[in-house]
View 1 (cartoon, helix red, strand yellow):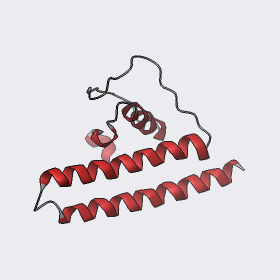
View 2 (cartoon, rainbow, N blue to C red; view 1 turned 90 degrees about the vertical axis):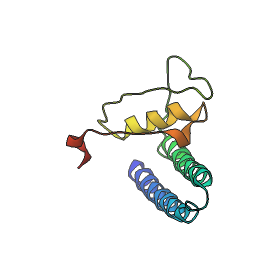
View 3 (tube, rainbow, N blue to C red; view 1 turned 30 degrees about the horizontal axis):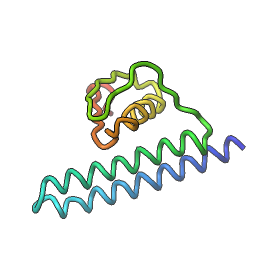
View 4 (tube, rainbow, N blue to C red; view 1 turned 45 degrees about the vertical axis):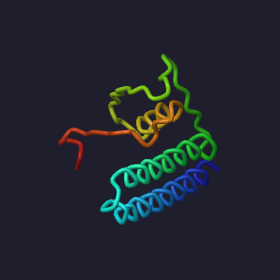
Length: 116
């Protein structure tokens, strides 16, 4: 049963990623006319994908994501430095940004040695 849930999760995650990337590519049509609308469009697309990741992780694969520590206020910025040993780091970053409504503002950086 775990294998079936894992396959369903992977399929849904891949589908949501393809949809999100397609929406982001369409946003290039808006860019020449309004950088602000382009930014809003992309933030919404990233938020959709991030929320779908949380739904998949918590409901389909039955992996609860719980954060402990100080709350991040709405509109506040934060820096999180994970070690990227697994996909869990990305899920924790998404979950951290979800509550204060900053899903579309996540920026991720990687050292050159792990990019490729």
